[in-house]
Length: 282
Ligand code: MBD
Ligand code: FE
Image 1 (cartoon, rainbow, N blue to C red):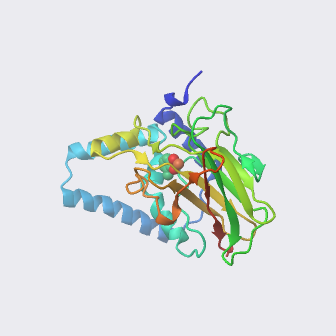
Image 2 (cartoon, protein in one colour):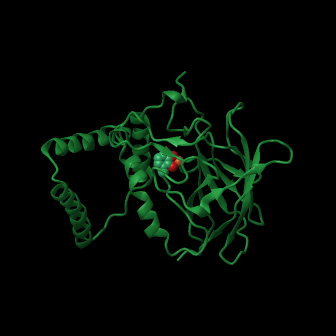
Image 3 (tube, rainbow, N blue to C red):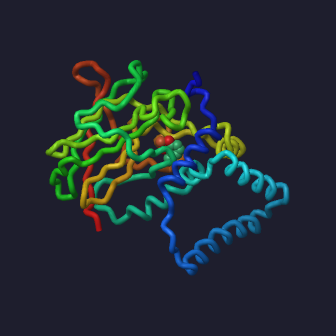
């Protein structure tokens, strides 16, 4: 059977592209004035770079070849989510008073199995990694509990691979939609994910290598928290002590999003509490 360690940039990129097309069709109707303004600014930024840096034909052709490869590898979702989404998220969420969010990234899959709290995420019988009890409460910004709030969670396994994007993993491995109880409390049993390395064998990996950058994101849990009448929160939570908290390739770490799990009294791994406060929907 194919192992998760045989994951390729092109296979995971193709899946991310398919998912995007299925679930994220952009709303039509951006005005010509807005399109013109934004497209002109992006094109001008590239031209300014060419003129100011005296870009050569060799460099221009390398750029062209690389852009073609990003498409061939299906890595436009990865490229954009790693290097651009953080700014879009900043703009989208600056009005919030409740819990801070961060980027979604390319590996969300909607409609993960619903599990009542206390829940254990779908995982292999021998799922490797430190057990983690992740728990807390979902409230509004006034601290009132949001009964039955949905806590969608997805994360990589102990090797940094995501189900549905690497081969050999059960479909919903380490993905779930956990339903908070009547007092807004949720409890999720899972394992601590490993740091994530951007695929090194695709166009994004080629850029990283050519630029002498590193390819790492700190280990993280992805979350979407929602309740009727409230703005959905998309976030990620990180772990104190991780080597890449200060140089995440995706620029998506915020100090408010760092967990510091403690050993469980019963010796079964670690536990941590994190509360979510949702802003009212507009
Ligand atoms: C990830 O797991 C991720 O969360 C982001 C933002 C980009 C690439 C891989
Ligand atoms: Fe991720």
